[in-house]
Length: 134
Image 1 (cartoon, one colour):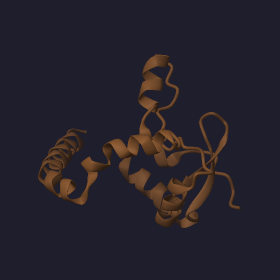
Image 2: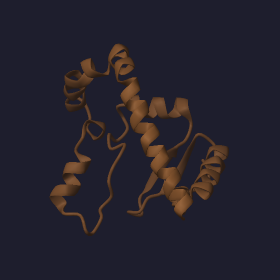
Image 3: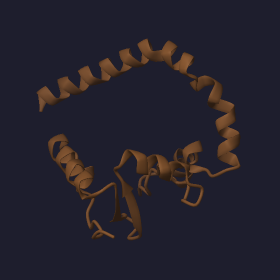
Image 4: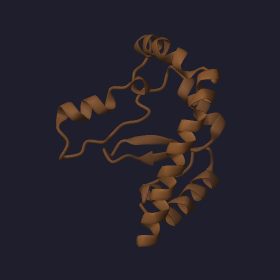
């Protein structure tokens, strides 16, 4: 086991520094323990195959993407933002996945590609403008 990461420098707002931290983390190995904001130890997965395994391993806690406990956020809002299909375990996840799977076929994704590309290009243009202003 590697040393527990004591800080989350990879979450810093500076893109250059954030990318450097991600590279450092990947160099430490595909799975590393990290101290969470709660003080608990979690696992940071940077390897592709390891992430695939973790996301399909039913023994792992289902909360893969969580909006933290922000003091300014009401409990109802926080719960609403965290109660999506990525954060639920079977059988609820399976039921929800069946409901949406028809919308995410390869054919449907290809049909959405132009719209997704347009949105992505627009967002990147806005980010480039913001970066020039700073």
